[in-house]
Image (spheres, rainbow, N blue to C red):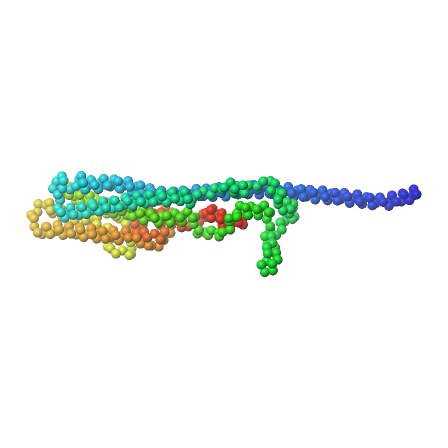
Length: 445
């Protein structure tokens, strides 16, 4: 019996040893698997927490940059409006001073009060010019007042209703924030995925013809990424902005400018026409004062020369003679020198020559030449100030620009100082508000 027990013990020893070895190997495998699972769990949880922080940072950075750009858009509205309002204020200041000068020559300092009245043919020229100057003075002051007030009203409307900062709501902030326990809601494969060894599986889509799901070439992203897309970018998916797309506030403001740009332009043209008539009138006024009160000859010619030169220069500075399409001769090169015809007639009239029909005829001939030139100048002013549609010019930095749908007078293109909202962004610029709604953002790019 003892021998039998010994033999049985010998027979069972190898079996017990193999069982123990198996148990050890199994324990080591379980330990290794547990360690791998623990490592994968910690790795994926670290990724989750990192992505959660990046989600919050991306949300705040995107809205922070968008608010900064919209603040720039609000400055655009203020700058474009201030440009018109500043010009209108300048025109008002000039108009106030000119009202005083104009009324002084009509009322307190009118001709014929302090001395004998000048001849009727000369007074006709003078009163025509001084009253025309007053007409343009009142007109451009009213236009400047309207343009400044309307521009301010348009800017206030846009700043209080359209161009507003995209500030996120508390609900949006709560959706953007993630807590650590949300990791427990993720897919098991995302929680225990071993990096590099077990890559993310590919997404599958349903084949419309066979009805079966087939894999795509893109790797599936973690669930928390899809949650971010569905929660924070649910409003995305529109058409991507083109390189020539324009921010909305520029389009809206250019539409508003339709209501005052013409008043702005013709206020500036009215200033030129006012000074044209006022310089002609003051030249005739000074000449009459010198002849009738001072009884001098040469000072009249020098005064006329000074005012006529100033008159000619301002017309040449502001008027760009159109190369084609004009229906009138360039009277702006002739009208400044009409006072020379008047001073020649006054020189004959106040000379020591004996009255003779020839000299009387010469004086009236000079007077009628002056009247005809002034009449042609009135027609020429209408021709120059007539609005015309022209091809849109390319934008040049530092230069005025207006769209082709605004019929500006081409003769005053360098004098109206008009700047419209652009129709497109410069290369390299983008509108974040448009990007936030575009399909580009829904791809995580």
